Length: 113
Length: 117
Image 1 (cartoon, rainbow over the protein chains, first blue to last red):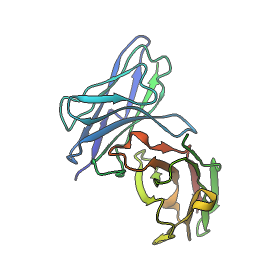
Image 2 (tube, each protein chain N blue to C red):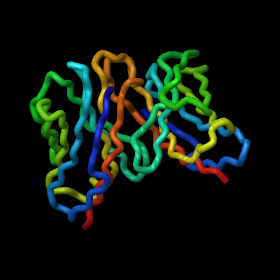
Image 3 (cartoon, rainbow over the protein chains, first blue to last red):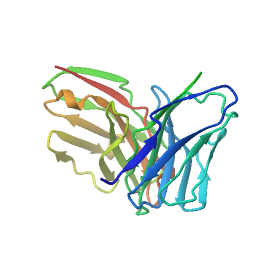
């Protein structure tokens, strides 16, 4: 089945540690996105990529980094510079048709130890 | 500036009741798209509907219906004869017209719907 796979489902970060969240898609989509979801809030865009080897900052990119070396993969690193990393992280993808709908992964819950 | 307001934080109804989720939006664009997504307990958001600003016809899909009114900047979502499986968080979203990616999509804060058996 085509879809988006995020791993791990739960992740714990120690003080000063960088952690990487995985996102893989087999939908052959060019565009991929990372969102952060906090309780009672909508989704906020962290980074997005429209094509391999290119990505752009979203609304809350500080303390995060990404790479897009393959079309299928868009990993997100939460760096030690992100002081409030506890949140639910969602990866999404879409085609490049105008205003196309998003397909989402099942998310990663990141918590601080 | 664009904004999406879902004033209902949580709604709880008994199974088989009808329920309406409100969505009010703000935009200066004359053309735009509106979306509804469902987030079940499993976590992933699932697309429900996309509507462009030119089309104010109401839409029905099974037990789901959507009422789009430009005059009041609202795009409300009604579930008829609710079922326990409808329990989820529902997000309304807004996107300016013509974007080839979703970087400009604005999400509301979501409404948590609980259907009691």
